[in-house]
Image (cartoon, rainbow, N blue to C red; front, side, top):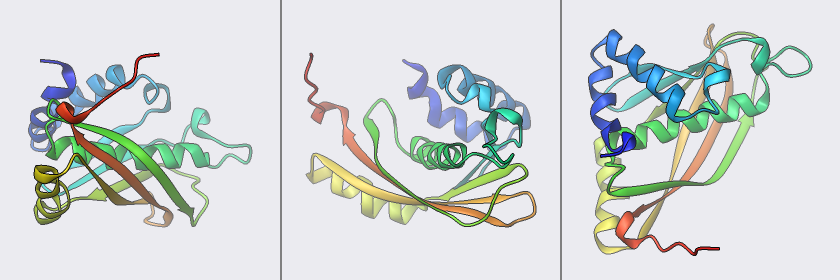
Length: 173
């Protein structure tokens, strides 16, 4: 069993245990090496919601010492992907980001948080049921990025293609 196949169970346990949340964040830093130097981490896991965070640190700054637009977009994508991985079995379904739209609303000069919600009804109606009769499904997740004071920094819309692994056809170069 690969590490991603264990992710839904790890995410569930991390939702109720601060120790397991710290452990999961360490593991994700190793599995997703791009995120590690930026300090991206899961802040909170709830039944239908994931909140991730990005620190206000030099590595995440732009030229005017705000959090860089790409760091904001990446933390939104991280949050959106994690909630799907928490609810879907990565050994059964492949996720690929197909589109990212982001509206920047406020300059981030402190730690930021990305919140993504996916309830059970939407999961069933827009993902699992359509996958029973089709090869792939696309779903657009909205993620809200705020700063520590609650200012809305950005609104992101991330479109994911979800496909059963047995329907995946890749070409070898």
